[in-house]
Length: 393
Image 1 (cartoon, rainbow, N blue to C red):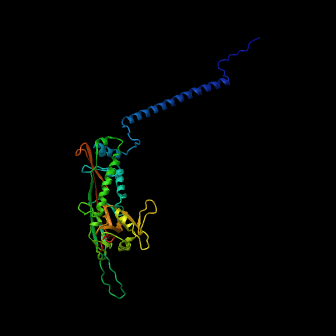
Image 2: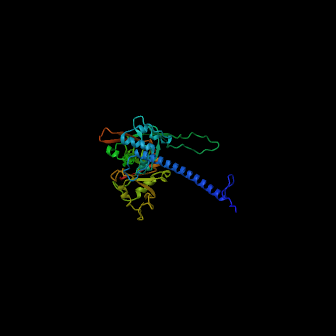
Image 3: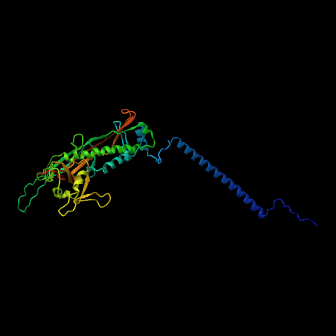
């Protein structure tokens, strides 16, 4: 018997199982090649990231503080100038127009970066000073002029056939407020500046703000107008019954060097015009406040009322009280209490920029920082402020 031939003849098709196995083997080979290519690309990307991290860390100083934050370019440049006097970063810094107060000054000083300047301005505004209740304006000139109309226009009744006569013409007065230079000169050792953990900007802002705030507060109250603002107590004061423009009216307490009842404070309030009383504020120091808050009305009630909520100012006869320590203590003929609408009565004019000049030579091994700011102040409405004089008359 003849045996059946098992070998496939050339040119004939293979079985379906063999075709499937061949297709699977081809797919697995292609997938392996694709996977190897992806892994190679990921490894290459990982190597590039590692090289970039090493390159970045090589130029970074070790952080000595627990919290190290990224600084903006203008902050880095300003910090470099404060620490080492290197001004290349400031000279080559390109900023938008809104950050122009980091530009180079012609006299060799530099304007403080916006973050530091904002810190100082915030401290000045929150300080217990007349600045917090006065009218504050920013100017670019050397002085600021206030135009005040303090006279009556004049009017009269007329009929259809009567002759109309000329009435009074209002007079406009110009009050000029010159700007004066306020300066501070803090210092730090070069070793302290070299310490990367030291917050040079925060330290500088705090020292300057403290100095400027105390100097301003005193000048706005008692400044004589010579190279400083003119304070509210430096103007001629007259009895309110004979008050005239250019003077500040006062009300006597009725007791020499003291006060025994609340009636003079009531008289002080109503010595001010009704248009100013709505925004009235008392100004006195802590020692005077300690005396006034003991006063009672005829029914035995205290005229001083503390704020009912946190942050709310105390009230005296319903009006806010500002504790300004530069006001004088109660004494014979002392003007220890002021009352008025200071937003209308007193104007603070200032230039918004703050200049800092680094001096590493004058006090070696310390570095001096000469900071300057231009500010002025004066009474702009003499009818808006009244004083309480601790005298019989």
